Length: 85
Image (cartoon, rainbow, N blue to C red; front, side, top):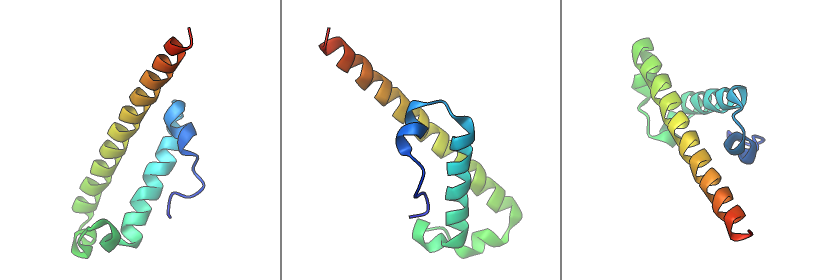
C-alpha cells in the first residue's frame, strides 16, 4: 500500500498539519504512478491544468475525510468518558 508507515491514529487524533500534507502528497503520487488503480484516465495526467485540478480535489477530499474522522473520534472519546463517570 502507498500509505504504509503512516500511523492513522496520529493523523486522526492530533492536528498535525505537516503529517496531513505528507499523506496527501503520497496519495497524489500514488495516483500519478498507477492511475488505473484509482480509476483516473491516463490522458488526464497529460494536461497540467487538469493535474492541478485533480491535486486540488485530492487535497479537499482528504481534508474533509480527516475532519470527519476527527469529529467521530472526538464524539466517541466524549461518549466513552461520560459512560465511565
